[in-house]
Image (cartoon, rainbow, N blue to C red):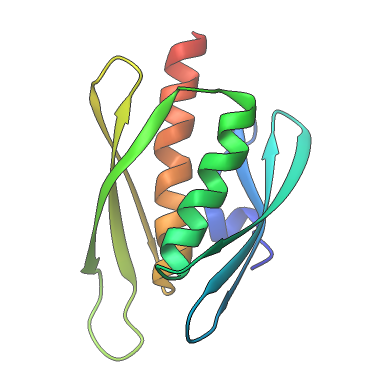
Length: 135
């Protein structure tokens, strides 16, 4: 997914932003390639997972964010709801994250693809935590 501003909904100046996300799912393994921008620098990682595409994406985000802000937060859980009706409905994903002070934070994103919605919801909440931590 080439992540354009309209797809990701990120304002300028956002610390973390998804530049590109590719997920390949095969019968026994998922492979994610993620390019993440952090305050103007770009980093890419490839991460496999035997637990599916969303797990691979979350691990990739954790890897890259951990390089820039170690120990900032950890993924806890997610919930997916249908935001619209019909076969082309959007997924509304809410992720629950525990920050370094053991406070629960939530990120939400709505998009037609559940994997992309999960990735962006996670990045959104990490941006909030990072911005609050840096203030």
